Structure formats: structure tokens, C-alpha cells
Length: 434
Image 1 (cartoon, rainbow, N blue to C red):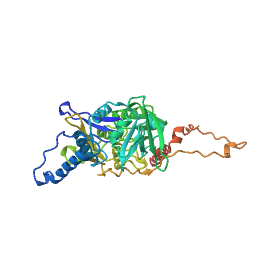
Image 2: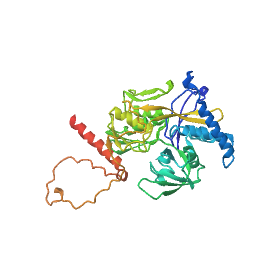
Image 3: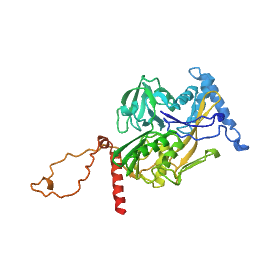
């Protein structure tokens, strides 16, 4: 539940953020809407307003327990936004303050992004190296209870608030995993969640691995530095860009990461009802990895900004997209402060890939589908080779460098292993063409 924020000028008093439990993107938008045109179409529906007032009064008079006006009005506003889409919401003062705390980059929690799907509270992705990921929670797990409280009819904001708390305190959740009939129970200890969004390593000489777990404002620069470090000793012959279980983040950061691999062309554009929601991002010529063979790993936990990067690289045929279908979140949200200390989170635009594809509820389909799994090595049987025969001839040939055996990590990660194999194959084909 790590947040992302875009910088805006203080006089505008605009607070734009992307809350990872919802994996949404931030874009600048005027705080005040454009003046509405005058005409009959803009008249308020008096009959519906009268019905609303009648319902309000009947609840006030007849509900089994007394409900104050403030609660009823806020519930009405909350319902009005919740019915728009899964990502729009009304934020009360506590929820809005919680969002402010999230934007500082540190908070007490279990490190999980959640969303609503068909009325169920669903894990979008666990953040790397957090209590949630270490406990084994997976994307698409359905959260049944939180500290014994059923999540039925629980709003997304209520669930997020319940899962947050003081570092060191415990949280009990039960989840139902696809294909299983019995819920799994987890007892997690909350920690201070700090997001380090970029990790890198050399899997083999010349073959790099770049993991981006979420998109923060500094992610493009961190990714650039990681690529340059991997290229320090020798040129990269191939790179795996791992966007699996990446829930998204800042729109500008996604464009910046795609720009590391593209030296021209469109990356992404957005469209909404207001003029200021129309934005576009194009690649620059300043790129550290424009010609490095590239495989991009995605899965059902790759959402929003991660889908922007995968979609741009796929449309521009810059790399091979491998894995499984992505999450399919192609909408943009803005957080607007209200005058009473509360806030409004509203979907304001959709984003599109360079070829004009909307990812909303569709996702990115990989070029090569590879499901999650573990590589099991078959037990070797006794094999007889020429070198085992007595009196064999020794040819005088240069000694080849010993092949590096597959690491335990590659054995445990079939998708990554296949990505590495594909990069090697691409290099073999490329060398033959020269």
C-alpha cells in the first residue's frame, strides 16, 4: 500500500497521488471544473431530488437505530462515487489523512495492494520483501475476513484502513485462493513499509535482470542507474525487465521507464472529458538501452503504469512480452481535496497505448504465454560419451568457458528461466545474420 505523488505548485493547492492498493495513476487537473453550459440538459432532475429527500426523511424517521444527518449525507456521497467504478471514492477526513501519510513513503502495514472485483476484495499484488509477500499471498487471492470481520459489503477504503496500523501489531486475514475450497488463514506482523522500486543483478555474464516493483517519481532515474551499473564491465547481450505483480504508480514514471528503451515514437496518451486530461508522452533520443535485446515479464498482477510500459514496448516492437495476461486497469484517477479536510478520488481519463489500444478491462496479452511454475530437472541417467572410452583421442582445441549452472532462483522461477533462454536464442539468431 505504498503511495505515489506528483509534484504540483503550492499556490494551486492541488494534491495529486496514486494509491497503490488501487494501482491508479495521477495526472494534473484543474481543481475547479470548467463552467457548465446553460440549457435544459443541465437542469437538476427535481423528481429524483424529491425522491432522495423522501428516502432521507424515511430513514431518519423509521430506521431501527437513530442516524445523524452527517452520516447519512456522507454515506450518500460515498455511494454516489462507489457506483461509478471500482476506483472512484469519497474520502473522509481519516481516510484522506491516511492517504497523506501514504505519500510520505512510509507507513505501518503488511505491504499489499488490493482492489474490488465483482464485489469481492481481491489482492492485486503483494509488494516485494514485505510481510504479505513473505507469507505467500498471491495476486487474485480473495480476502474473506480481516481480523475476523467479513469483507462482504466492506468498502475498499475501509479494508485499507483496517489493514494499516502500528508497526509490530498483528493482523489476521483469511483468503480464498482460486481452485481451492478451504480458505487459508494468515497472521501477519505489520512493518514500516518502505518501497524500493528497482532491483537489478546479472543472471549470467552479459544477461541482466531489472525488477521494477512499482512506479515512483524516482523510478526512471533508479532504473537508468541500474542499467548503467550492469553495463559497467561488459556490454549487455540481453535484459529481462520484470513487471510481474507491479500494481502501477505515477504516469510520468511509467513514461520515463519506457523511454529508457525507446529512442523515438509515442509512449502513451490519455483522454478525458476535460481538456486538461489530454496528455501524451513521447520517447527522447537519450536512452541507455535502445538496442539491448529485451524480454518483458508480466502477469495478472501487472497493472496500470506497468501496463503502460508493456503496451508501449509491445506496440513499438521493442521487446518480447512474456508471461500471462495483465490486470487490465487503464483508467486515471485524481485526488481532489475538499474544503472540510476530506477528499474526492475520481476517475478522470483513460490511457491508450501508441497504437490506440485501451487496456481498460482488457489488459496486455503477452507475445509468448508462459505460466507460472517451477523448473524440475530430470534425474540424469548413466550416459556414455567419447571422452569416457579408454584410449580416446584428445583434440587440441581451445577450452570453452564452463557454462554456469542454473541457479536455484531460475529453477524456482520458470518464467524467468524461459525469458533468459529466449534472450540467448535471439542472440544466436542475430549472430548468424551478421
